[in-house]
Length: 258
Image (cartoon, rainbow, N blue to C red; front, side):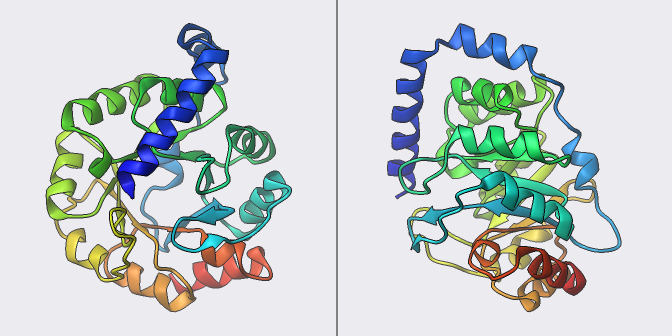
């Protein structure tokens, strides 16, 4: 599944590159307003912080929400207390786009994460050009030299990398490149199975000074409390927010639990 998602994302990026060259997108990235400081926004505090996600669909659940106005949803997340907004930009299986990212960036004051299957420098430049402050890098999807190259490019453009791991070996690889924001995804992207306890198993291998992010398997405030007790500084939440009735009150309840 992960291989297919990466291949599809790269094919779509290749089509965009045919319309707008790497040199053009690189120039757009350099000319964009400076990225916001995501590490400061997500720094450990006396309560958990939340990355709230704009997410229309997923391969495991299918369609989740129509989300006609991603900017309005992002504003509600900000109102509810989200420290960062994540925007799914993958088109084929998640129904997202870079236009969603641009709209969200224009509407909110908090940092914005481009969540996609990033495997090529072109995607990093277009993320910065669209206003992203953070970019997701999935360790399982990348050989170490490519992971290192993309991490350095993200940093050189003034952005922050959320480096996502699914095992102790992947956490080690994330730390090896100097990642300061490390996520542990409860969803195995090769099988899409969930393990809510994976974060607690791996959190001890993430040293102090590195921000710990728990991802996936959040359906209720009790799940946020579970992650917080296991050492999470930040929890990334998507499906529970887009499928709930009121994202503001849902976020407030999640924050209170953490």
